[in-house]
Length: 367
View (spheres, rainbow, N blue to C red):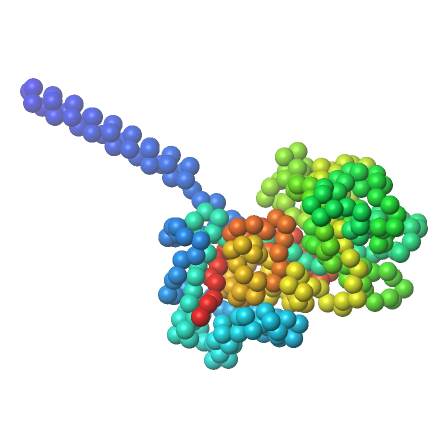
């Protein structure tokens, strides 16, 4: 009887132990669940910035062959020196494309694949989008065209802090530094974020390209994050379009107060260029060029990027596309394991660019 009593006590303890372990497992799984609605994937953990891999093992097809080839032609024509620096890699990739070979056969052509470790060491590289806006403007101040677009003031030293945004909005800079007047303060702000833009003076005049000149050296603050913190826009809905919609629901003073929270300000220069250019002084081809952190990826590098496929509303479909992209641009907030993919010119491109705040895998191609 005593032995039976002891056995029952042991069984009860074992059952309790099993229950406790099961509960620990359930809670651990719940709290460690990865958020994959932005395209995050979790396979092998990567330790180094770049990990040499032999094969990608994907059935996903390359979707931007035509755009990539056009971007290579632009590099060859507008920057022979950059083309020459990367010619061995370019030639082998062209040979691979000519053979219409599979992505899994890249190594057979002598192309080495170096996977980026991503922001989390699981290979998840942050992917955003940018574009070239078209801003309506006037050379003179008139009617609704009252918001100045400035060139770089000449009376400041190289590393000196220029006036912050609020002071510039309040007219601290001389009128001689005004390039044009737009009819929308938020359009000017978006052009600053994108780094350049085409100016439409109306009357069927050719568009004028305003390229990035300098910034005022004040720190950048995301107005999107401010709107999320204030509860105006949900994090999952954040995009450039939702910010523009917020502006439509608020008066000019409220819009200006929001924008002034970002002290950083960008100055432009007017050019005679007919195409959109990046930091490499090469025309950008949509879905073939990207902005990168140059301390990690050299200008002219080819990167194979597995990007999340979004639907017409910008929602991740849990499918992916493969792009061959060339590093030709930089951005003030593009740091570390982060790409900004160029989406093109105008409103439609802006909508696509605004949707992207996702994650994908990336491999640098080298010979």
